[in-house]
Length: 464
Image (cartoon, rainbow, N blue to C red; front, side):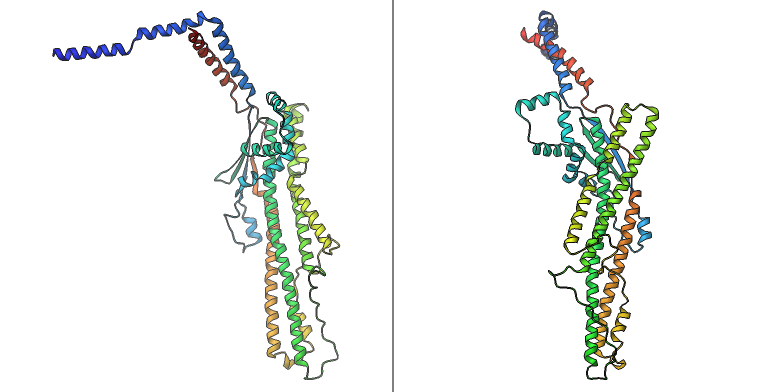
């Protein structure tokens, strides 16, 4: 028992030696009183830290957040009514498929920068400290500025696709009005790229089918000519031919390099019309949006004056919407290139209804009867004539199949154009943000205030 008591007493002595509260109190009092001994140092340190925090909150670029949300509807009803035999592919027809890749593509980012004059606006509203840095170290070249702006826009522009068919576009930018303008431009470009992509893809497919239809027509002409030759060979040596001349053989296509086939001219003309129709659709789409903005402007002018920020904001939107979009400009360039190619290949009237070589239904049986009208009845069932007629039937069946596919593709094209206006709807339009999301000036100043107090005690105690 005495040994246990001695051991317990020794443990209490160790604890007492480990926590010397008197020394800790003395040190704290020493630090607390150090500010009174070095008031100037403490005050200067406090003001310096608080000033640095305030300067930091002023120097750090503000970031405003602007967001827009689109609801993409999979409208299969019009497509099914227009073409009941259409194969549905939910992966390829997804209205939100590759939305992020399209919006953040370099071509789209460059178009956004050019349409909004983003580089010029960035230089004009650059922070005074950063402008001073440019004067001291020199500005970057114009091409490097443009590349840097593309990288900055790519980092600050975010695109998210939701499971319910939503596409959300968000940006963080130093200027509130430009943030809203960039989001609206990204939204408009996305819709126009989707429309142009769908329409142009179907149009290209139709043009390819038109070219194949021209080749099928040429095969029919060659088959008819073959039937006529075989019939003439079998008729020689038989009964005397009728005095009525045989139907003339249609000339073959001129060799390449001397004259462009008519089906190629028809294909070019269809592509030109498809581009014009796409331009008209996009202009109509922008016109509807412009009409909505003008209606909003009229409503706001009843409430606010012309100098109110809300009215000025809508006016900026109308001015931006009146400018031609990059997609329309690209379509016009494509149209001009196609017209030049059409004229260089011998085409004359671009606005004509149809070229002579365009795909159209043909009464092949009537043409065949005209060819065989002078052939003796007993030679119509000749094996050689029958083989030539079977070859003609195969060419005719292929041509009819291509015509059916062209007709279905044209219905699909018209359906896609009509259904696009119902496919996307803006459920959350872009708004001009009122407050920046970063930096938090109040938090930075409070941190500088309390940090200045801590550093003031530390500096005063450090001198002692």
